[in-house]
Length: 347
Image (tube, rainbow, N blue to C red; front, side):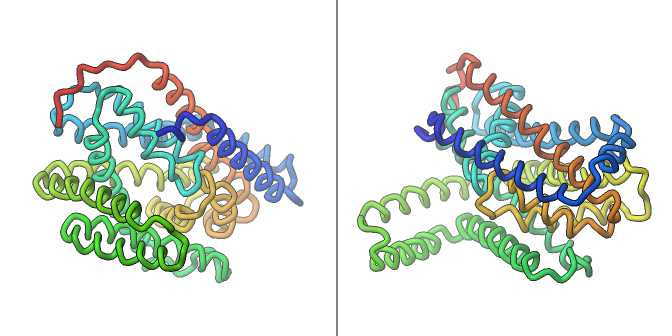
């Protein structure tokens, strides 16, 4: 939690993201006609841009609704507006940290600040993570099975896709194992911890064993709750499906904004699903650089050479950069928002 307050680490994350963004845009625009790009962007009606940004705001808000459903199920009294704020906090901190690693710790910190226990907040985020990974992996799997031209035959694309799919699938499998076989997970983690100790990468064996045991116990409590509340898990998964679908459908809004047709919304959703899973595990804040590069290779078939760069710029502005600014402002408001401790009626 101390890292959350460390302004220096946040500044470093934002700086890296800005540097990557400037470098990526400069590389993308190299050799391109700025006038033709500007003309193409101006041809898009504002309603399409506003719709795209609105979809992303709803995307972040739905995570907050999921948090509210779970926290309420744990007998805590908290407003849905505050929980929606937690959703934007997650988006902001996930965007400025490598592999989106800072999102959940930040949400736990903000919830603890409002009197929600770490156990309850961790449990709620575990359920949301399970639903998120399930939908993401299923979408990507369908995309892989139905797409015959995924960004051409570039080796780099294939490696990124394989890495992203494997890491996301492993995370999903790990959560499922925690739900049904927590002791097996404990043994597996202990085994790898022992290997790291013998390799002298980890010096304090007892400390790592204690940390693994504590983590597994915490997730085991979450697993029991998941098994005992299938209806709640079903609701969270359904909302997550809507949430992820909004994110993946945004390129179609941009596609239609340029007056293009011929491909269905599902065609673009599945391609975006493949792109997202390819960059999700990369240690890049917000996937900046990789997302833009993969978009240019994967979405050529939809936008054509003339509108590809404008389509990429408008998509990234809508689904990332604009919402990053908005979520940053909301995170600051949430931080300054006076805490109310009356929520302490839960576990």
